[in-house]
Image 1 (cartoon, rainbow, N blue to C red):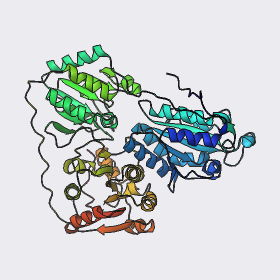
Image 2 (spheres, rainbow, N blue to C red):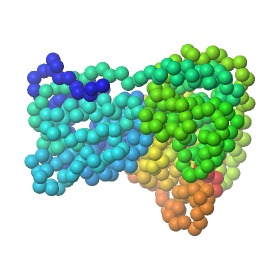
Image 3 (cartoon, helix red, strand yellow):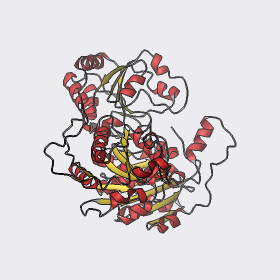
Image 4 (cartoon, rainbow, N blue to C red):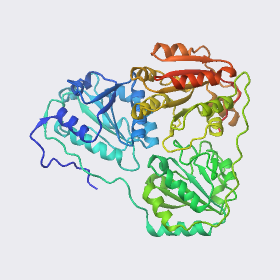
Length: 537
């Protein structure tokens, strides 16, 4: 499919800047996330009244906010960064957006074309190579006149599945040059699976005595959450969440929900050991976090995969892969699959009641949070050592209600939560560790400026809990750099304009959470949790 954008029937010449704003309006991209510098002033000059500029205080937060906004809206978001240094600051968040498969159009200023041969201050040498390989496409147009077309091409590349960020470097003196307006065009993003392979999978499900579904982030990301429920019920098969999934893809209180697969080969293989058919939908086969023996590939089970990502398809071992996007694939599979007569699997045992005590157990915090939030609350998580507790006590029940990072890199959660709240203006709860919060704490300033309905629950264990858990798993002793004493999070929150409270007693947890959830704007609840009650899987 060609990605050249037509200018047929367009009006007469306009400035590159005017053509770009006209294109962004047509693409419904009138919210711009940025942190400006001198090389971006030509773009920012005489800012149009119908555009919203969301200022973040550091470029990593710019991209993570745009990531959350794009995921919540389902459309590409626009992020404007400052030259090479600003792009460098943002690279961690660009990597996360790439792993999240989030559609972003990222632009960065470049020095004036007339200076580029002189190694100028703020000049970016080989600017398009800097963000690779974690952008789908990158360009610095050969002519100023081509800037709007390059931005359009970046949009279409970002939106093609599997989605992801695309990048355009723009010299600072391009904005005033004249060009022709660029007209948007229609592109279909979904594609259908191979009918023969899908029929083969349907027959394999019918013949299986113990099938299992493993659902990954593409299911919720592509709006196939309800289709996945219907498919599991039609097949009467248990459903597992794929390892390290960045979205919730099935109601976690549903009778068919089996739980969360760990990213550890031996443990995952043990959980799937009795299944004769494993159907992985919208995820790699499989994402692992540590090395080990994956006996699941030698267990005799047939493994099928439905995925829209050709890289994930190429890397899948011992698997029959069906390439297709989630909605047409699951809808077509449902048409081929008769209702199953097999008995339903045993119910997942409920989590035991968490009891209040001091120091505060993380299980008790998650249980209290689950009781406090409303059904339409969105949860963003970046507390790796407390994720198992959240999975036990804070079930996600609906589509679009949960986000975390697919990259494993910290710094995503707080600005992404702000971007999600900006997109839907509904209550967002960010569950974040004290260590994670420090990577992008300045995102609180943007949340306060926009009076976002954001409750930040800091599960404060005084250090890097995930690293401590990994040390135990990998048998590493006496390692430095894991403790974080002396950080006054409530004071930091207040300095950025947010209300905040510190909770040191279990008896105060429920009251603090309910009060924060009633606040119309952002509020930080810093809860001192027992440092010995965290784990990874």
